[in-house]
Length: 281
Picture: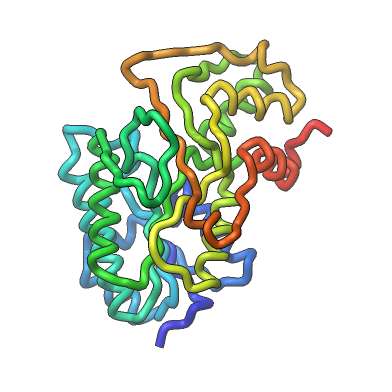
């Protein structure tokens, strides 16, 4: 029989999976992580592993990344991001587990006129977004016991843009930041906190876990530097490219409907930087 204290995280060596594993372990869950050694494209091996560990929760972080997905490898992207998600959902059914499908704001068009909530129909316009949307549909159609979580611009201090921005400041180098790409940055701390709350409340369905507000890449980088005690003007170089301009702002309407108040992206960032001891004061 599955145990809700046992969490299996697929793709646990990735940007998102590694932090989910760490934070859920700190929260008291028994976390079992797998990565490339157990592909989500191998259903029989997945089922054997699930039968052995009997997880109550499976968090599917495995996937082909956005920056690694294009027309040339879209077949592989669908194999992993869509069929892989279905395989995980089938395994969850087998052992009676809740499956959490990690999704993305890329399931929407990259240029929206207004914020979108969980009731707005996705219309992805990139190979990556289309593969992630297909994965959502696969999970939704395979098991009723699921949580699909979309977010945007997830960050933590250990890799990715957040680390690159501070590394540039420390080294006295310049950092190019887009002034024509907009979303709502969300810390992994907030993301996992509300994921756990949804699981504890036995919620099902689709949720946007995202901080409130809207920022450009430049705004976000400038706030990181400001809070860390650097002058953004000496580090950042504004950059634009009309071909890849973006505006995708998610609203957490499902959480608001049950009385959950998300922090603004500025509040979230300051709280996270305080947690990891990166505030200047």
